[in-house]
Amino acid sequence: MDFTLTPEQTSFRDEVRGWLSKNMQKDWVARLSQGSDIPRPEAYAMLRRWQGQMYEAGFVGLTWPKEAGGRGLTFMEEMILQQEMALSKAPPVLNILAIGMAGPTIIAYGTDEQKKRYPPKMLSCEEIWCQGYSEPNAGSDLASLGTRAMWASDVHTFWPFTTKRSSSSTALVCRPARSEPALGSE
Image 1 (tube, one colour):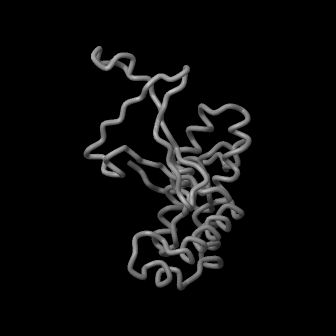
Image 2 (tube, rainbow, N blue to C red):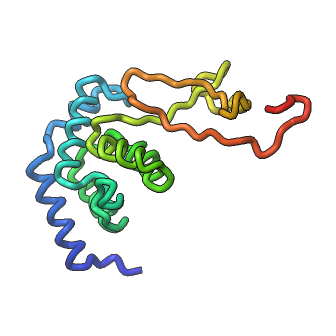
Image 3 (cartoon, helix red, strand yellow):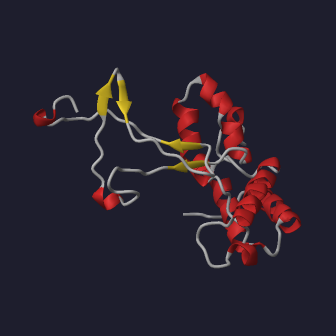
């Protein structure tokens, strides 16, 4: 496998390096690593601003189509960006679940209204998305997960999820592939 960069990829790498050297706050590591894996409010705000700066510079959603607010580039450019960020110890994007999962799903399968409404706010970090796990009697412990969906007026009933810092929670609601007759229509 040949990992030699093309002239265009080398130019992109240089663009990323130059931008990072001019825009990265040098004290971010100390500010974020003060004892918790969960960002404190000030670290959270800093990461949100950082993603906004990256978005304005065109470094968020590189592989997303241009019509969805991305740059329409390849995963090679994404790899170059991630490598340069790691080498310079740059902070990560905050809205990773929106960028890597919810956004691409909406782009591929969403309605025209959803495609217009959500991707720009995901990329800019105006809205933060999360993935919520909740199960009655289990909390977030997926080892004891026993979820079931029930038909109720042609919609699935599922447990709601709320959080102080999230505008949305991604959810996958599926019709069961099989059912247990003893449970009726569940």
